[in-house]
Length: 491
Image (cartoon, rainbow, N blue to C red; front, side):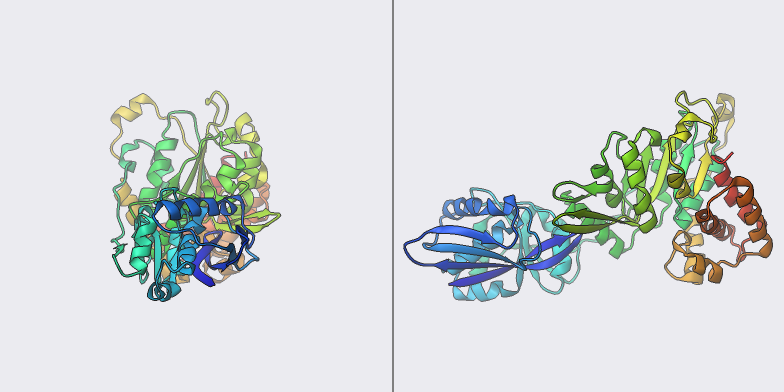
């Protein structure tokens, strides 16, 4: 007798259908075989399933059991298939009646079974909910909130294997999830706390408006970390689609979210001792790294030169392509990484020298990496006397309003693409550069010996500055300010 239950297999953050087929061959020979490219955790699942079925009060079927995970071309990982294997076995053994078997036809399931039959959390349920849109899914109860964020999907949460069997046999109901409103958490930090650093606030406003990577150089105690933590507060709130993508990445990384959707852009700040696999992603069984967990948000790298060289060099491609591809012998996975990089560093070991190309800490960074950071901002030390007399500067609310206005101008001109995403041909078409501004840029690139990549990057920054100044055309003063953000480490 053959029975099947629908489940899923993760490919990056995307879920693909996986059919869990169970065949029981009666006779003298007993045993089990799992086929379909299972990893060790999947092969071990049969022992968990056997104990869970018996400890839940059900009979283990007699005969030789073959479990097939289709399609066989995709590698199956993790304990997600425990629940669908158990349900398929109980269907084949007629513990689940004919009506329950028909009811399970269009239901996606996933969950890890404990030996007592309880169901533990799994990763990737948000992607499962996207896969099962307009249908029904059954997930562990602790995953119910994060699976419920996807609209038009009927989500049920189960605590035990017995709950699922009773639901299929229409003897009991499972708890259903309901899509909650997108949460708008308050800002933990406010730019108004930062005194006498208005020029740095402006540079971060430019970065937020046009989505430009930024490097903050300055001695200790000048507010680099505080201003970086304030940056998510001036970014526009995430759309529902972006919030679901962020939750998908978190779910695939195994970070269970019991709150649901949040409109606040994520902020990730890994320690400088983190490995390349932790920051970029990877591992034996690939997982998203910090750069993907910061998708649609901010990746803050404090003490940038203290990160290992492999980590820093591995950042170059994701910063350009806004995605991470992790290749293994068994295949390749791709994770989104559309994040805003904010890096901070002391220009020298003792933190006293101004940030220039000759500074020893700056020399540790490769030119190709620096070339991918649009804004190099000098954060000066402020005398105590100036701090005592400084008036409150612009707040997060004021800067956020400026960013929104600049984004509106971009949308009216070029659609959903931000200035930091425009190609060279896009800039030629919609950039509206005055000839004098391009002449000034050409002269500055020659004198500063900048690479060809900097031509488009500086034009993007200048276009954003013009948008913040509510100007249709990019003038010389906009281009000059953009070049100043490159000259900090080019002297």
